[in-house]
Amino acid sequence: MSARLDYVAVAPDLLKPMLALEHTVRNAGLGQALLELVKIRASQINGCAFCIYMHATDARKHGETEMRLHLTAAWRESTAFTPRERAALAWTEALTLLPQSQAPDDVYAEVAAHFDERERVALTLLIVTINGWNRLAMGFRSQHPALESTAREAA
Image (cartoon, rainbow, N blue to C red; front, side, top):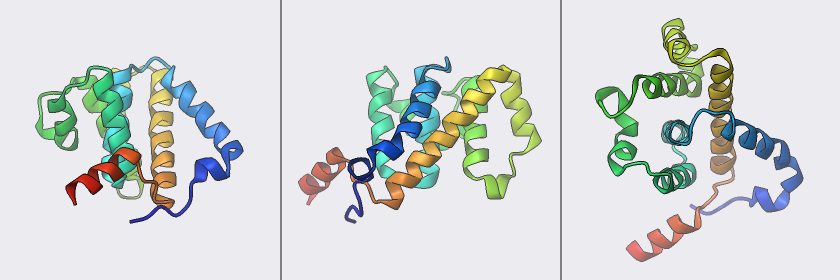
């Protein structure tokens, strides 16, 4: 699969609001581990290899364990995640799969039990942002340089 367009190089001015939102959400107090888990889970659902690689790498840099990274896709069957993380991952799935889920009340109630109102807004914006990045990366077939070199080495 080859890249379609380097959207960052073509329209950096158009990405400024997205980058500003990313910066704001990153500094909203949700915690680095939670940020990366949410980004990884949404990217897994969307099938965005570029973003999965990026956020797994970032999570490792911030001390995340390989076990939890591998179990993110099966978080419901794992005891490796806190109740707060589980609520965030459920909300991530609900909003990423919005046409199917319709953001159910029970999932929202669980989020409300673990996140205050401001945190719920921040978490929801985090999910909105990573879904946006996934769509940019996948729509333009972004290729992460490390993924390209790994594929060449395997060939």
